[in-house]
View (cartoon, rainbow, N blue to C red):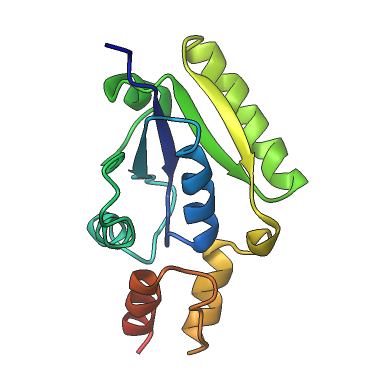
Amino acid sequence: MAAVNVALYPATFDPFTNGHLDVLERALLIFDRVVVAVLKNPAKNPLFSETERIEMIRETLVGRENVEVSSFHGLTVDYAREVGARTLVRGLRSYSDFDTELQQALMNRKLAPDVQTIFLMSSFAHIFVSSSTIKDIASYGKDVTDFVPPAVAQRLKEKFK
């Protein structure tokens, strides 16, 4: 039996956007299974709780057998090893994303040489979409359905009533 090729797609996902979904769909073309992992980052003050973020992602991904949604805290490479992933998937929108992600990838490589990082460029349609921008737009009562999955749009609408 062939080994299952697992990747870890870690991020804060506050909230999960169509850009995140786009990167995930392309990762699924490369890997047998992808673990979408919500990062518990004590340095950030997310709009949505960890549970809410997991629920929104799961609602978005209903029916996808080759995706698992979980959460973690601590070092990403340690969690990658825990779930059997040898690759980290990271999405890029711009040069500034690349600079930050490259530094993180190099540190991860130093900490865990057996865990590789791949970068997937955001599709042109999503290059300007960021979670913080979406939250800002939604906070003014504007429609964000072009930028996020339906489950996320609904939760944003409820959050900013």
